[in-house]
Length: 274
Image (tube, rainbow, N blue to C red; front, side, top):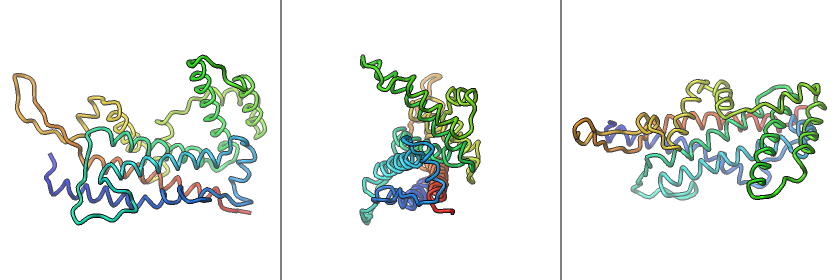
């Protein structure tokens, strides 16, 4: 179990990390922060993916990531980023719920990196279209559960997206294969982690840890919490469980590192290069 002094140091480091990353939250809440320049990579990408512009999908992922981060920050100290610290600050660590927010930050930052990282336009377009097709299919299932039908139909949407893929050089067979792809967050997180100092395995471990806590799985609860055995009753240990600032700091460092790279990629793709 961490000592009080160690815990306070990790709490301070966690808050400083999140406070520093809040510059991104200010960007996504600034009118025109998403602007792209003529002659940029995005200008060409968006032309190929209209009306499902790559830049808009990436900006949405960044905005959602920052929203989770801001909510996490507020849940820790009860203050928004613009508010001044009081003389005495109380940090509140929840046992599980805050990892749901961290997972939202990590997944959306990784999704933005996954879409923006490929250096060649055809692959960026392919990834954007694959994500759109997966969303369309899920929308159709949801509408069906409510007794409705998707308009335009799935076949119409699929033909439209297939045409976008062939327009950037895919054969009809390749386009069909692309649309069957089911990229998951494990894949996205690993690729995003590989492009940062985090690396793939630790990034995936952080994501799995946050997910297990969000789901209330025992593997997460036992490995990502501070545990103190209060007493034993036969073969049963009565244990006090509290949130661990050290573990939360570790997971947050992975998420923020990927968020940093996502914003760097967005800026690169949005800037004029010819």
